Image (cartoon, rainbow, N blue to C red; front, side, top):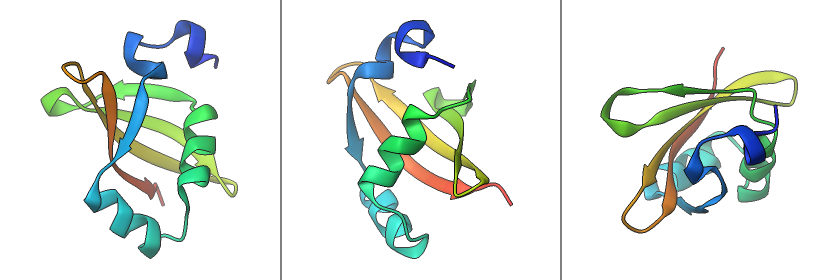
Length: 86
């Protein structure tokens, strides 16, 4: 799916990686580049409570969820966490 042209208005905003995600990146052995590739390969965006969204994507033949929260004031997307679904 081409979220760049069809996705929400905030889809192309800069990313801000939260401290929580930085720890998870180490624990789950992926880098910021891996995260950006996962987001570029997004399959689905699902609204979550509290203004967050779950991005469904793939990495290493596994389905992953990436939880993001658009910050409309600063026009950045906070990346809260990322984890494999299984």
